[in-house]
Structures are given as structure tokens and as C-alpha cells.
Length: 101
Image (cartoon, rainbow, N blue to C red):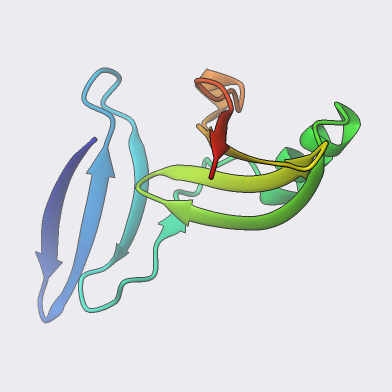
């Protein structure tokens, strides 16, 4: 992920770009740590529905970090963390689940 700061007058934003596709992954105010998905992002409700439909586990936390939805869930007593690329081009797919400690 490539990041950069863009300013227009006194207002600045940080942009995060996928270096392979050139697609904007997310942007946030330069004065804030809050990130927001880009306008073409897959809705969080669709991501949650997909995880629930697959019976992957019980969702315990969701955040948006560095251009990805990060979903933590529990299944069979294990904690699993999913980093989900929410872009329509990626189909909302993740590289794969990882077990968290």
C-alpha cells in the first residue's frame, strides 16, 4: 500500500493507493487517525452478511485499517482474524484467515 498526503488550501487528506492496480483503497483526514473506505468500497453490511452466510464463526470486532476491513471472529474456541479487501475488483476476498492468539 502506498500512502501520500494531498492538500487543498488548509485541508489535507492522506490517500492510500494499491501499487499494483492504482486503485484508491482509503482516505482519511490528515489531522485525524480515523480512516474511511473509499466511495467504491463494498458495504460493511455485505461483508458481514457474507461471513455469516458461510458460517465462519461469531463476529466479535470489525475495523477498517490501511485499506482493509479487519474482522475478528470466534469459532470452536479459536480467535480468527480476517483481513478483507473490500474492493469490488477483489470480490471482497481476503488472502485468508489467520488465527490470532
